[in-house]
Length: 363
Image (cartoon, rainbow, N blue to C red; front, side, top):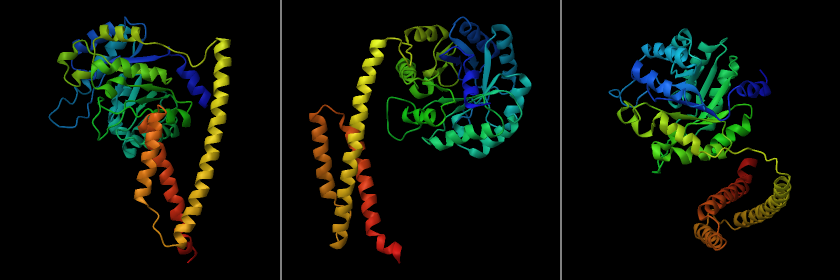
C-alpha cells in the first residue's frame, strides 16, 4: 500500500475518529453496558478495552485475561462497533486474532522495547489488520517511528499512531506531559500515518480532558481515544481519568471542529500576505544568525591565540539576562527566549570547541 493508500484507507472513518471504552474490561455486564451507551453516540466508531493490563505493581488489577475477548465479540455482535485491544506480546496477538478483534494496539510500555515490538510484528505478518501504536513512555521519537517501521516491514500498513503523552520528572498538572512537538514531528516525517490523541492518559483527570482534546484537534490530530466507563468512580483502574458515556457525549458536543483550510477567499488572501511577511522575517533571522556565528568564529580564533577558555560564564549570564529583559519589554515569553538562546549558545560552544581542537585533529 502506498503512502496515499494508507490515507485512503483511513478515510473510511468519520473524522475525527473517536475511540472510546473502559481502561479495563472488568465484567461482561460492565463491558456491554458501556458499549451499548457508546453505540448511541454518532461520533464513536471503535470500542476499546484493556484485557491484559501491564501494571507497575504486581498486586494491582492486571486485567481479566482472554475471557474478556469473548465479551468483546458480543460487543461487536450487539452494537456493530469495531473492537480494539492492547496486545503486549505475540501470544496476546494470537488470541486476539482467534477472537476476531478488529484492531490491536501496542501500548506505551511495549513500544519502548524494540524486541517485543518485533515479536508482535512477526506474529502479525501476512495479516490484514489495523494496528494502533502508542508513543513510548519516554519522549523518544525514534522509538515511536521504529515501532511503526517494524510493522510496515512485515506488511502491516494500516497503522494509526496514538499520542498519549510522556513521562516527565517535573511536576505538572498533567499525568503525562503532552510534548506536542513530538507527535507533530512524527506527522512531518510520516505524513501518511494518521495520528490520534489519547487525552485520558495525558490529562490523568477527567476535568482536564476537554482542554487537551481541543488542543489535539486544533493541532490537526485525526481523532481521539477517550477512556469511558459506565461507572468510572468504581473502576478497577485509572478511575480519575475515565468518564461516563453521557459525559463523553457532552464533551464531544463542546469541541470546536476546525478545518485545515477555509473557503473564504478574503481570509486566504490575507493569510497569504501575512505568511509572505513571516517568510521574509525568517530569512532575515537566518542571515542575522549566520553573521553572529561568523563573529563567534573570530572570537574562537582570538581566544585560541591567547589561551583563553571557551566558556565565559559571567559573559553568558550577562547576555542571557539582557535577552530576557528585552523579551519581557517586547511582550515575549521569557521561557521561549531562554530556550532559543540556549540553543544559540550551544552552537557557539560547538564552533569554538572545533576551532580549539583543529590542531589536535591534524596530529
